[in-house]
Length: 119
Image 1: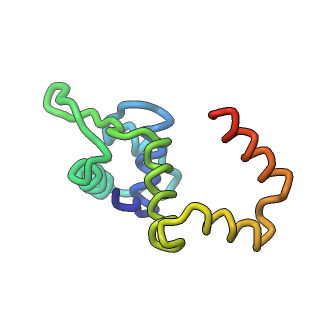
Image 2: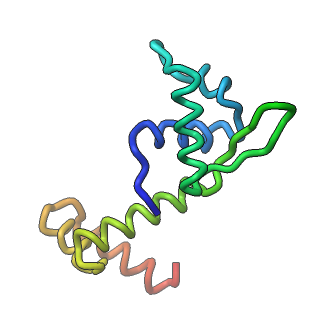
C-alpha cells in the first residue's frame, strides 16, 4: 500500500473521524486559509484511484468514504517500514528500539507475556 502524503493523510483523517462526506463538507473542516474546492476534489480522486477511498452517487454529487480502516493503514505502513529499513525483520526493529532506549525491559516482559497468552 502506497504511503499517504501529508495532504492525503489529512483527508483520510477527516473520513476516518467523521465518516462519509462530500468535498464541500471536508472544506468546512479545514482551517483558514482553506484550499480550493478543486484541489481537495483532485486529492480525493487520487485517493480513490489508489484504493483508499470510494464513493456513492447522491444526486449529481459524490459522497466519499474511507475504503480502508485507519488500523489497516497503520499496519501496512508499519509493515513497509519493517520491510524497507529492518530487512523485513520485526526482531531487528524491536532490537533497534531497545538499543535506542525507546522500549524498556519491563515493556519487553509485558510483550512476552502477551505473546504467551496468545494476544
